Image 1: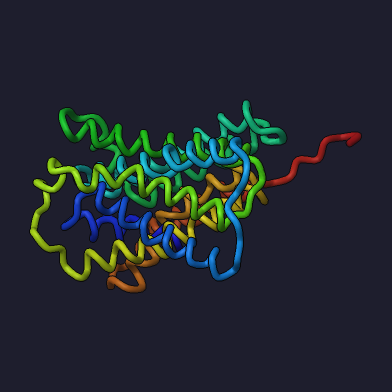
Image 2: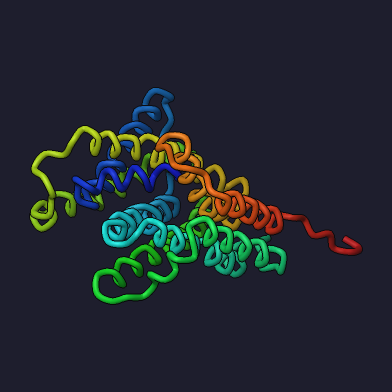
Length: 286
């Protein structure tokens, strides 16, 4: 739910704010919220150059860069195609985890489950969205930007798993604070200011950015680091198959959108893919 609502909120925000403003704003809200909690709970910041180096990398490839790429890409391509491109993330994570994470071996049942889940995404969004792949000019660049963001997320799961152990709230606060500082110069740059569709954003755009900061960024970051430590990058990557499902459910519940038969078929395929990928294989004699 935290991440599934982010695409709708991002669309509302980037309609009146530049992508760097949205990314900087959501990170600023999240860092301020988590920083306040650290002060109230009297928790210190992580120590050690190694953990800080990992957090700096995560701030770049797991936050600032993909957030900017997605926000920019969503202004130029259909959200359905963006969802399919983002669904490449679990497949990339599956391959990377095989080489870089102990106990995350590439197995046939995992590959089968991830492929079934991906087919479920295509069924959910509609095969017609695939017809928009390719093109030229800004459209092609926007597609590559969203695909690049999905690869960033995949690489980030590996980096986050290999990061030295540290408090998830303190880690999240530092990472989001770093990402905010990285995007602040871009948010204030005159070249971006000139592209604002209106001089003063509406309350809806500002609230969308605040909700992005509280839910998808602050709470989402804490949940992310907890899941990475507890279940590993391969399992966590399956969230990208569930995000579009939540988008459909949100539309059905709050936007008077109708639930179609292919939505139910997609739900069955995605859940089947998750189940197959996570089944335990018993090794004879083990």
